[in-house]
Length: 444
Image 1 (cartoon, rainbow, N blue to C red):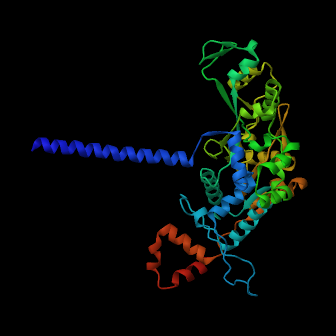
Image 2: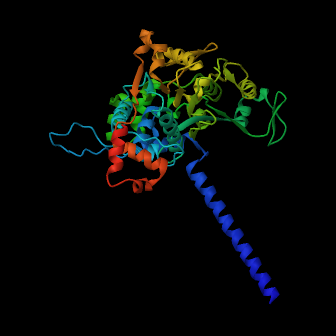
Image 3: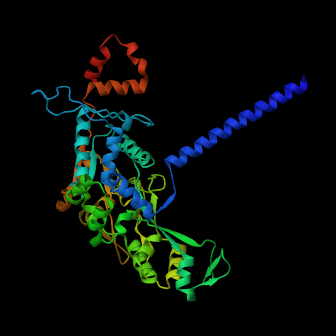
């Protein structure tokens, strides 16, 4: 009997281990599905563009608009088309600001309509050269609003709906070795020594720190014809070629790093198709923790004015190409290019940051050492009313600032929702029927 009992115990132990392993496998599959880090070829990316151009060709403003639509259902008008309707819609922001948020923000009807009207302008491509400051008195919830908004942007880019693409160069050292033999000394088939620098791979990956959209590596004068042939959807192409929201596809240029790599590879390889074979595409997922795609700067955070570089990458590039024409150098602003740059309160160092953004917001360019860096970010911030003095006297800058008011709650239904979140759904049991609504109206 003792033996049977021991065998049964061993069986249960194996069964439990199997369940844990199955859970681990499911977790792994979920992470792969939602946070894929796989690199695809440029050809596979173009197939994605032809299949789903609207999702594949998005900048940060179009992504932000789509993100809001993803979390916020269409607004409801209780009066329909009657003469009593003033277009002041009821929006459900619970998925955006309440669900899965550590500190929920409850948007009343007034602010919800202001916010949605602002976001609609992003899709039209008419409000790109601005900074958007959400103004409100202390305690109005503006910091909570912005933190929750950015966390949902970060989560959205990890979903299939929120996919964004960025450029990665995979330099095939063996292929370049065959063309420029004099630079290399092949030690064996798996290890390569370049002027005493040992490489254990047959290739190296060079990430674009500016998060360049891969379509920008098609030369500007060829993009329209190329996309016309690539995309079969005639309705989308009509919008692509004529609407302002897609101007960036035909007007923007890749960063100096990608441009230099493209030109030098073209000089060595001779054919653009061979260059595109070394151009890879990766999914972009924003990470506030690492300042990738989205960054928040508090007033006490130090200002990073020195250029950023990577000596290992720079030296390896110099050795591969046999020159120093490719400068792997960028600013801290590049990390949020085609992303979201955020100022939390316009005080201390953030005053200087705001003023420094004047030329960048107006022209989209600034100098990094001797190199001109192009920046297109969604600039956001929160501000107290008394801090507007820091930019109001700069006349040219004042027109670049769009202020959105976040007042104290003026909707009693939203006030009641705050009570329920703070004290629990059963708080109504401590009031007589309909009294809690009247209590909220008195507080407002």
